[in-house]
Structure formats: structure tokens, C-alpha cells
Image (cartoon, rainbow, N blue to C red; front, side, top):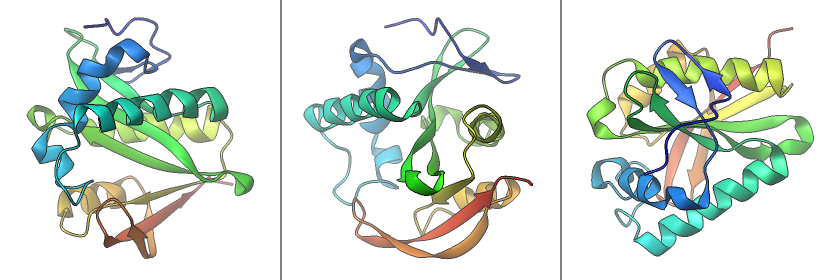
Length: 176
């Protein structure tokens, strides 16, 4: 399993690095987990081929846009936690989509919020984005509460094709 070397961002407990093609086992352990997948896929956990395609898209998004849903590691012990980052939403307007996916063993520890704060600061202060969009599965109240704590404001419901559901959607604008 690749080590979380070359971190480019860190918070008190977490370190961020970029995905690499040899990270497929990490990606499968996250996106292939049934508890994680229930919030992001209507058909359950994707197979390894679909996860490999997702990993390739993340790598391409980094190359094309300068961001991705970056893998997260604990700074103490280097355990793989999940991912938190950005993907294109309305790049012509300087708006990216923010998101976080954590392995269930790391839920309810405040890590998603910690990752969110650091990634949001990076998006605005380093990447110069104007706003961030985020959505959550309509049955995931923990995600709703976290988005509100991070300062996101509800704007509308939007169809999320992987679940086939209208997801509550939010926006966080860069401070003037």
C-alpha cells in the first residue's frame, strides 16, 4: 500500500496527497465499502473496474483542473481515512464541488469537518475559487449538519444521477 508521502496539505490530524494509479487498493477499500456506497450509488458498491475508472477520473481531474477528491491519511500512523476535495461543478464561474468520503471506522470523530475546513481554505486561498457547491444524500442527516457547520447554505435540490435522487444542495461563497 502506498505511503502518504508528499503531502501538500495538513490539518491537526490529517494529511492530503494526490491519487496515483497504484492506489487502487485504497480506492476499493473506500468506494467499494457498502456503508460508504449506500450514500453515493443507488445500486450498491461498485465493482473494482468501476472503482478503477473513478480513480482514473480523479487523476485526470487533478491534471486538468489542479484538484481532485484527494486521499486523506492520519498524520499519526499514516492510516488511510478516505478522501476530501474538489471536482468541477461550474469551472467557468470559479465554482467547484466539495465533497468528503470517509471509511466507516473514521465516522463520528470530527475528521470530516476537520478535512472540510482545511480543504475549503485551500480552495479559496490557494486555488482562488469563488464558491463551492456541495450536496448530500437526502437521508444523510450527519452530512447535512456538517455542511451547515462548515458554512454552506441550502440553495436547492438537484438530481444526483448515481443515486437517482434529488439531493439537497448548498453553496459556500468566498468571503469578500
